[in-house]
Each structure stands twice: as C-alpha cells, then as structure tokens.
Length: 427
Image 1 (cartoon, rainbow, N blue to C red):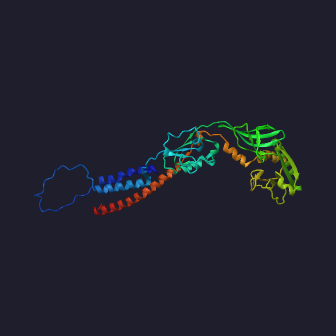
Image 2 (cartoon, one colour):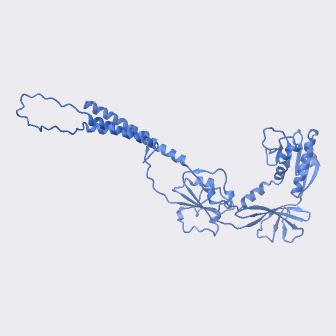
Image 3 (cartoon, rainbow, N blue to C red):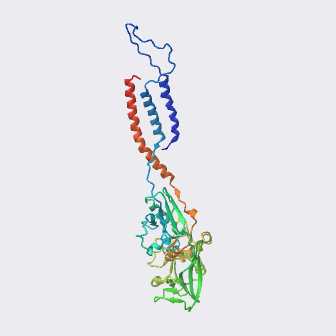
C-alpha cells in the first residue's frame, strides 16, 4: 500500500472528534408513568460512574467516513501483485559469433540476440549486415517490451554503438562488457604518388584509433591491381580485401571569378594551395571552360551567375549574415558555400584553412568504413541508464486515481446510510 501524498494522513487524528462526541453525549431517560411501584424491583442505589457509548453503529459509520475521506486525499494505491518473470539475456552478434563468450550455461529460452527484432539464437541468421555494430540505445528501448523484470546485455562496448541521446527506461538493463581488445591495422585507401603508392591505414584498438600513412615503393611485387586498376590488394597483409585506389594524385581545380570577387579569389587560391600541399596532393589550376567542367575535381565558382551543371565538388560564394560558419554545406554532399566575403582577419578567426582540409579529405564511404572498423570501447560506467522515476510516479498516480473512483462511490453510500440511520434514531 502506497500513498501519493502521505502528509494528509495526519488528518486521521480527526477520528477522535466523533468518538468524543459519542462518549460525552448523555441521552435523558424515558419517563414511563405507572399507577403503582409495588411490583417494581428495587435497583442498586449506587449510580454507575461509567459513560455509556450511544449508537455504536453511527459511531462506526462516522469514523469510517472520515477515514475514507483521508485516504482519498492521501491518494492511496495498492500495487497489483505481478508474477515475476525470468531474466532475459541479450547477446551482441559479434560476441555470439566469437569464441570469447559461451552462452551454453544460460537458459536457452531466455536468450535473445541484440539485433533489430531481438531474435532467438535458433532463428538468428549470420549475414554481413548483422556484423555491423548494433545501436545499444534503440535496441534497449525495443527490449523493454520483453516479458522480464530485468535485462542483462553482453556487449563489446564499442564507441560507434552509442548513438543519440541517453534514454530513460523503467525496466533496468544491466550492461556486461566483454573485453575484446585486439589491435588491428586495416588498409583504407591508396593514392598514386611519384615515388610509389601512398597507403592510408586505420590502426585501432580499445583505447584509440589513428590514421597512418605509408609509402609503398613503385614496382613492389606485393601490390596486385584489379583489371580496372581502381583497387589494389596487398599480398603481404593478412587482410586480402580490395583497397580503393586513386590512379592520379593530381587534382584539377577550375576557377571562375567575377571582377568584384577578385580579391576573394586570391585568398581562396592561397588557402587551397596550402591545403593540398599539407595533404601531399598535387593540384592543377585552370580557368573556367564549359567543355572541361565535367573533368574537373573542384569548381570554385566566385560568380553571381547561375551555376553550370556538374557532378564535381563546388565551392561558391553566397553571403549569409545568419550563418554560424564561414563555409557551410549546400543542398548536396559536394556543394559548399562561402557565407561572407574573405579578408585577412576573418580567414584566421574562422580557421578557414582547417575547414578546407576537412572538406577536401571528406569521403562518405571512407568515413562509414572507419566507423564500422573502429575498435574503441567505452567504460561500463558510461553505459548506465537513467531510471524513469517520473514514469513510475505517473503510473502510481494513475493507479491511485482508478482506486479513488471506488472510494468516492463508497464514501457517498456511507454518507447516505449515516444520514438515514441518524434520522431514524433522531441523532
């Protein structure tokens, strides 16, 4: 039994009021006229000192009315006794398919795979899509519908499995992190250089992930090209997957500048030259040519004229006083817009050179690949979820409201009964 507002229970002291009234009330004896007292039995001359309690039924009714009224104000609720369900165990697909974790000791009917739909081991099928890191928060939300009092999740705890805001759930989820910290070096992409091939690799473990660069000398027999020569494979590496390869390391940059943006063009040209030099990529600059616009890698459009149709990356100018950054992304992935005119002061204040380097090296496919292969993990303490105290209180208030409806009905009936009895007894 619980109360929403237990402070009102002090009002139960009001039960003393009807008790005092009944104890102190003295009803005068009824006078019966008789012709003779000869046949009457003589009573004890000593008077009784105790006070009789008049109308026991009315006393009980009135005290019950006060008690029910106090219970309504205090918001009484009696939680229903629910059958305790078994604990359900959630296992991340990566651990399920590895030798690091054995679930044979767990109840087989209480095991689920931490994957959308929460399948059991018998119906779970191992596919390439199921090898991706799961979203812990969304799957924990989905698991709230399972018939269990608590959930135990065995996870690897990778950083890329934490997506979005930390949720609040009423059903507890206990996260058990199984350490799998094998350092890996994963080739990501390769770019042609004058002296060979620049290979970019991801070195990752539980604590950190770092992008490394390595020059592979030209003519190295360990490098194998595919037929279209857009991918390579390293025979010396344990990873035999094909690595994306860019045959030409020269980036073609095309400028189209209106006279009013001549100064902006000078600043942007210097910034792009510094960025490509930092990235160790050669660049070739051209003036705008309609016939060659499809062959360029980057089109710098400092002009108020309509932009020509092209699939290349575009940096154009379009002032916007409400923008939060000097360069913002446009309607598509490879469209960028300068939001203000360039000068020596705002170039350094906004760190435009850093922004350009990030734009020039941005590769959606590569970013997705890095995210999938990232082995960094988080500590178990960061997986603690907030308890839904507000939700529990809300459920209690709802249960109390449902019970109060019956108390109001009972109180009304008792008031009617008390008035009827008091009328008949003339109290």
